[in-house]
Image 1 (cartoon, rainbow, N blue to C red):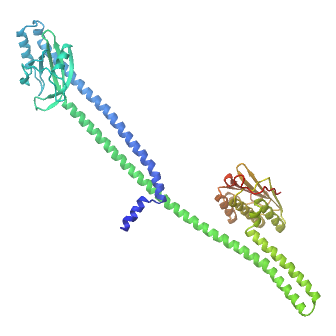
Image 2 (cartoon, rainbow, N blue to C red):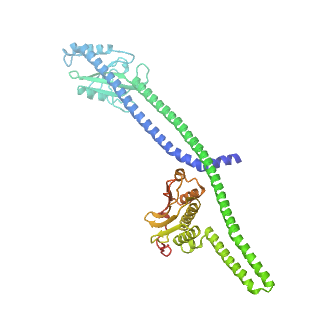
Length: 479
């Protein structure tokens, strides 16, 4: 029961990969179905035209054969009919005997009706002779004798109807050709059954239908194979993409851990090398002042106390700097422009590198994610410049434009290796790239390694990260 439920849920609750495979297979199924219907329609239409043409050719051949039979029969008694008077009973009897003797095949014969509807000649169905058949119709209600007489009065004509075959007693379709002997008011004709033609046509139509069905089966088989290939390739690609995604996720997770450890190491070093030593100095100064006070040297205790207070002020400033590096409060309070200005001023004071920050009149309309991303990119870039660039001048430019916002950081240092500019291989550059990718922005790194032409890092964010008018903070201008 559980297996059935699992299979049911798998079929009617497809996962993401199955949905993609179904989405890929559905247009294929629709296209193949349309092609199959079109092929079937065109095949049937073409075959129907060919069968109709064949049927028409066979019927025309039968008609030509009937016309020849009637012509030969008329030539056989024309020497009698041409010399006889309209009321020459002996001549009529001779002609009737001639026509009665003209039988051919299993069912071929000649018949004669006068214009009153009386049958005069019917060698294979003698029960018709000397009886009036006006108003006679076939099993489908088609007039027979009346049509013969009308066609004979007009000279000649073709007629098709259902008639009983003399050889089998079964009804079949018949075509007749009738000519009129106007002097005697006779309708003379003969007919041929076309059930063999209809059977051939029916067989041809059955063969066409069989071919169409086989074509449907072939197309269905090809479609099934194609759909299975689509599903198989889709599942294969999905498995492959999942493996790649898992590998990338593991790599990203490891990089996050590495970044966390690096940040923790940096903070630990700053606490140990900076604040810890300053606090040790404060403790030493306070201990020195306490000993002097215990000896009663009040004047001598003021100097170490002043030094301890100075060290405490330095420790407080260092704590504030570390806190600002972790999360600058000015970024939340005043916006990106003042935060970058404070970052560059602190960088210049700490490193001695000439630093310039400029921006046009730029409304603080970036959303929070965009502000943090640009600030961290600037922070990472300045750290790389301090450690590796050997630069003497750095400039940061921030501006908004019709396409969004752009921050440009340039230095006159020794640049990056060409491989590094083509692909951000260092962890700092990878962090920049990932931050900008998450916001659908672009990061450009321009540098010629081995020279003093420096490096340019340009980060651009799209217009979608600008807040709508009315939500922006107070306009700022920092230079």
